[in-house]
Structures are given as structure tokens and as C-alpha cells.
Image (cartoon, rainbow, N blue to C red):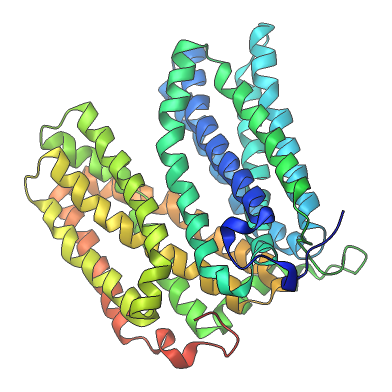
Length: 416
């Protein structure tokens, strides 16, 4: 198998065979994760009739990222990323396959479903970190922005395709069928990664070197916080992840209070996913035309300006429009952060940094969801929306005043 060098990479992503394989594998991974996340609680509910267990089996999926993100990031920088991605895909395939097999044999149990949820989440955590660290090896420096946009777009595609696919298969072809298709997708992912010719890193295996766990586990955070631009973007996105973790719950309560139907509620989230795809495609062009600072500042002030509109008695389509434009802006910021993450962090440390960012994001989300629920329970929708707006305004002020987003914060070798 030949290995592509940076000089051999095609100038455009659509001509890059390795990137097409990476994109296809990542799409399958994202859709598979979403299908399982939806079908698994449905299966538990069918087996037990217990909403508690249906919720808990989804909740245990949040545990592996918290425990594994930091050590997985260190591992990604020490041993073969290709091997980790293929191994994670195979582990997911085997664990997911056990569900339809046990179901058809009449031996499926609740403890098995909990175990599958944990194993699949652990494999997905390792895969995502290795996948991000490998991406700069596949594309050239000039294409990092476009590649970041394509990466962000994948999650919007998964959000559109996976929910109706999982529900349709569950009802029409049987409760075990979504898992069978999901297992096949993981085999396809492994084949895609195996077919990539570029060396995905790290440059040399460090598995034989002694592991200094304290330095390895804290290295990603130290690197991220030592780079002013990445530090500023991380603060903005981490607080945003915390704030919007419970936005789905807030929007459901809001739209239902406004008299919307179930179909209209679904439309809000479908429109948001479409808008996220649009934002991921527009982000590189917006930054090229406006510049980093105006794009980031504009995103935060526009979000802060739009959010109070949700206090109005909007119809379902009005809420969908407001939230869709906000999601477009969120996607723009995510693309910008990923672009500069890949551009200014040395590739031999990219796994540790991505592991740190994954840990921060996955820690913030359950806490933010719980806080939104508490606010809704204690104060209702209007007060919860006002709390959101205060935080959004503070983020906009921080983006405007912080020196960390200024051009002097850009390293000389960073993408522009």
C-alpha cells in the first residue's frame, strides 16, 4: 500500500480519494451512533415498559466519554490511529450485532443492553478523537477550513437521517433490524479506514516508551490553554455547549406551550439540522470574506439578538426559523474552532488536545441539561429564556473584548 505525502495530496477535497473514504466512514459512524441512540431506548421500553430504564440506558452512554476522553487522547498520540479507528469500529460492530442475535434467539436481557450501550459509547469516544487527529494528515493545509466544514456537516446529515430511519425500521422491519443495519455500517467504516492510503499518524509508535500518565492526561489541557486563540474559542464553545445542552427540552416545552403539534415540534429540529448543514458549508467562505474576528463576534451578537424572539408567542414555523438561524451560527463557530485546532496544534499532540476538548464538552452537556430542567421546573419558560439570554449577552461581550481572538493571537503557521 502506497502512502501519500503532503505534496501528493490533491488540491481539492472532491479529488482527494482518501478524504472521500474518510468522509464516507465518518458519515456512517455518525448515522450509526444516532440510530443506536434512538433505537436502544425504544427496545428497552418495548422489553420492560419502563421509561426509567429507557432513560437510564441512554444515560450510561454519557459515562465512557467522561472516563475515556483524556486517556484515549493520549493513546491516539502514542499508537496507530488507523488501528484505533478500525478496532473501535470492530468493537462497535460486535457489540451491536449481539443485540439482533440475542433477540432472534429469545435470550436478550436488560443487562446486555446496558453493556452494549457502554461498549458502543466507549468505542465511539476513541473513534471520534482518533478521527479528528487523523484528518489533517488526509487534507492539505489550504483545505483545512473546507474539511472542517465537511466534518461539521456530517452531524447535521446524521441528525436528519437517523431519527426517521431508526423509527421506521423499528416499526416496519422489527425491533432488532436497526441494530443489524448499524452493525453492517461499522464493517463498512472499518473498510473505509483501511482503504485510506495516507499515513494517519502518529509519525512513530510511542507504545514502548514509559507512560507518564499525569503529563499525558493533562497535556491536552495545557496545550489548549497555552494557545491564546484556541483558548478563546474553547471558552466560547464550552460555555455554549453547557448552555445549549438542554435547548431541546426547552424548545419542546416552549413549542408545546404555544399550542404546536407533534409534527411542528419535529419540524423545529429538522429545520435546525438543515440550517447546521448550511452553516458548515458557509463557514469557510464567511471567514475568508469577513475575517475571523468579525465572524465570531457577529455570530455571538446575532445569537443574542435573535434569542429573545423566542419569548414571543411564535407559531411552530417561527420558532423553527429563529432556532435554525441560531444553529447556522453555532455550526459556523464549530467549523472555525476545528479549523484552527487542526491548524495550530502540532499533529503529534492533536489527540491529547481533542481528548481534552471532548472531555470538557461531554462534561458540560449533562450538567447543562440538568440545569435547564431545574430552571424550567422552578421558574418556567420565560425566566429560563431570560437566563439563556443573559449568558448569550455575556458571551457576545467576551468575544468582542477579549484579545485572544485578535490577529496577534494567530501563530505564524496557522491557517488564515
